[in-house]
Image 1: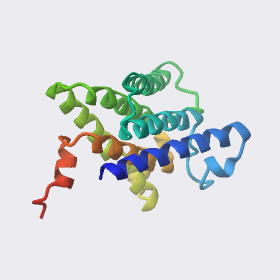
Image 2: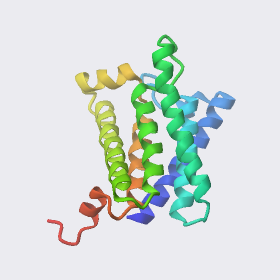
Image 3: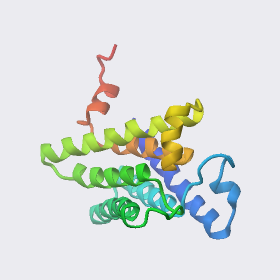
Image 4: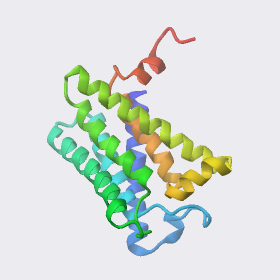
Length: 193
């Protein structure tokens, strides 16, 4: 499971860089999979590129803990600033959704808290990551099944389909780093039903 988490992080990072490339050179087909869906914003792609790269290096055990924690703080800050932008400039449409901003905030905090040995910080990190892991499939299901009530929530907030998939992959990748994470204990338990 840990190797799967490593490769998911790499795929998300490469996809983030590819979408940044698409935004830079205006290749709409790469950032807009379906014209009726929400487009992945450039700052969202930047968040995924940073998250994926930091997680991949963490999975590979490269000794750059400071860089990893710096990325965690930057990702949390990206989410927080995006949420604050909704408070102070609600009419701007060229930004990530508030749900995406909340997910980035939770992922950044979860990354940082997971690095501390205290049991309480790891438990908080587990709940933050689990929250993202539960929000992402809702958006995916809303797109797949075109669920009007559920889809309206995420269409209103503007979470793109690939964004939801990437959040799910990143949250799984982060949870796979911690063998004490409750979800990982269920998935790796030899006594599972």
